[in-house]
Length: 349
Image 1 (cartoon, helix red, strand yellow):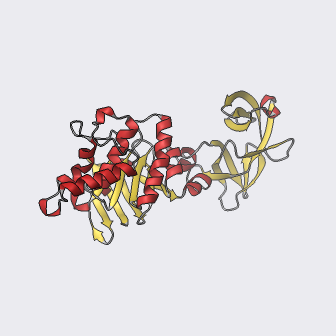
Image 2: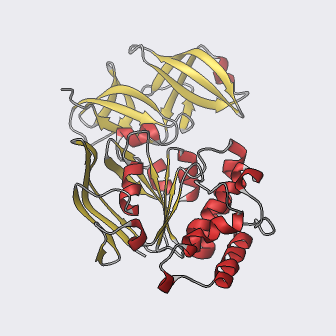
């Protein structure tokens, strides 16, 4: 099922939670809505679900305007962060609940509901646990049951709101792999909300990066990580270092000297240089590069993070080096980013 969000705005007490958002989701695609708290990602998910109505704009399921249809009429499966399982029902009854409450004309037989629940339990790798209650399951198992319940109604679209947010890191990693396998096996159009960039980059076909009620960028994991299109995306996705610079005649300058980076497409003026701490080349000497004094050095897993105070600007940045690299102990380090982006400095006010 294709989903299309067209120029949607959503206000709460006149506060715009979404500002004219448009998004096309292909049938069978796994999409991540990624952003910090308050970015609008959960509001967008709830609008697609039918739990909220847009202030303005349209939501299409296929060619049909679904903007004013209920969650039942849209036939979506919804998985919440905290499972929302019925504690007094067995696992099998939880999974079959959505089928049991259908109008009698559309309700499967009891035998069919039991068969469907059994199939889904096998799919989510919980076969044999149908008679247990939610309190007898681990957090990861409860979330698998919640997903099976959402899939039991054979939804047109599967929606997940921070599905692994209540789980510890190891269980989250295991369930991420498992969810991708389930998606590939079933082919549901799936949209999930997360603030965890690692989760989004690992799982999704495309990532929708959101900030302050707007979509900043849409792309594959490689596209949003390697070619961020705004300062926000560069700072939010992965780790980044930034330096105030100026552009003169298509060259990037720090203080009174060029640093060997060309930006012919940018107009002269103040700007900000962004790069990844690991994506640099060290230089012995240079006429045009970035140079700084080691202010701090610390071990981070298999690498060493070196904090440099950049001469002339008093700015501090981080670069990443191999653990035993001698440059980490030097008082002065020169380098140049291998992959970088310069954005014009935003005009304040």
